[in-house]
Length: 85
Image (cartoon, rainbow, N blue to C red):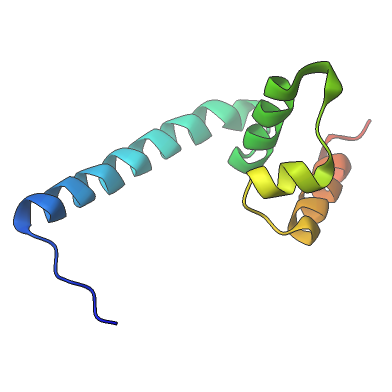
């Protein structure tokens, strides 16, 4: 199925969104860099913070992060090895 071409105003809005998203992403990454925390790690920590004392299952975290369970497990293993000790 072929997609319809965006009208000029829609194209400008989409490009503006992408530019703004990129700028915000880079600012957040720059703020996290001194803490040695990646955006992926930050988003998981934010979800855990929202979950409170009850926490979340790994499968729930993976689903919320739009990751496979295996990808989330690798992220956890990497985070543990970097931040251990």
